[in-house]
Image (cartoon, rainbow, N blue to C red; front, side, top):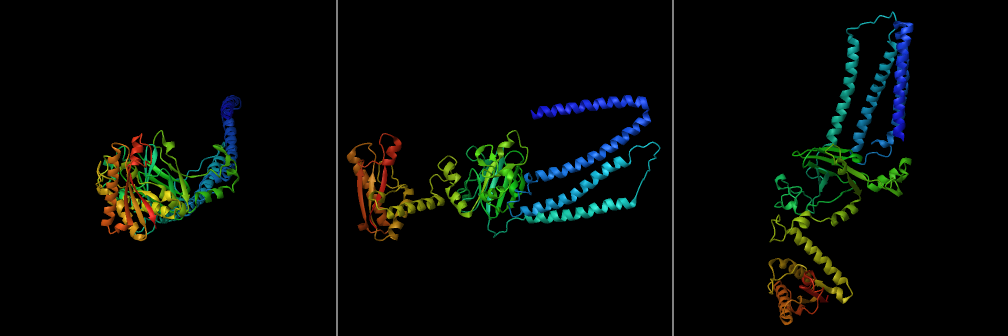
Length: 496
């Protein structure tokens, strides 16, 4: 309805203008061309002054009205350490350009009024004026010098790279049509190398898996960063030009295919702190159209956007950003899983198929220690039975596989840590084959584990080896998944 009324108003104004033109043409024929021209000139000059006044007042009012929606004013003050420098620079530039804007607009319309066409007035031609030339050259030059020097100073401060020994977090954002692919370093704190020739369906970033730094890298689905911690963002693109834009942190850098860029910033306000600041402004104390049960300030989120028109799906490159406390960040980071271990390990792209990686050794050791501690603390006898998740045997035999030693070494280390602990090693099978043979096989496997531990210096008197065959299934034997769970080796804490 509003659009229709707007169109009708424009059409009405056009009709009125045409009719005024026709009336003016008729009047000029009656009164004479010169008289009519002078009337038109005077009228146009007066209208120019009226328009100037309305225009400048509208500029001031609209700027005041919309300032809370513009970055740097009202609720949207910078949420990064360097942002205040940039906001101050923009404000300084706006101050001087604002002065020039008002002077030039007033001069433009005033001269249109003063030097309107008047019968008998002769124009004055000034071919050159040294004084005017000096004034309008020197003043802008001086002002521009201060602005440029201030801008260079701000640029050098904002774009300074990380010092070699400086504490920081480095992440990576890769733009493509139409999303951002994020990469975080794992526990080693380092991002691995990439090669665009390695990009394929399972390796979207072209990571070189022979570089061990890549093995613990993470590919999270959201941007989560700790407050008051310096962040270095590697920025690149996989197809066309994109732009890594974090408006609330005053971060904006092109993502160029084949030319990695970077940006450094330090978040100073958590998402929750920013929301609390927004709650003080009336325009954010209204229901969110997408979630009417909450106020607009409650649903606010920082965002990562693309500031380049990169294609028809450009809008979908928006990604939410969360700034949290250091404790929340560490908790979130601990929940993330290495992309290599979750998506590459054991596939055709895995160059370490027959090896156990250091990161896996550490993870398994931590997993074993946590499970053992829970068993030690447990009061229920059933909870003192632990499965050796990574102990395997050759098919149909009691020979331990090479990679089983890591799990058994963890057990041996724990028995040395708790010298009073005694355990029972239990072997189990599924119900495939002869029951008596299964019982014998399970006993031999239990003894194989006991022999390995004795070989690591554990006293035989602290160890019992028992085979249960197929008599104590942990799951159904009707499915392959169930039978796999039943083929297991466990140990039970007898004394601790």
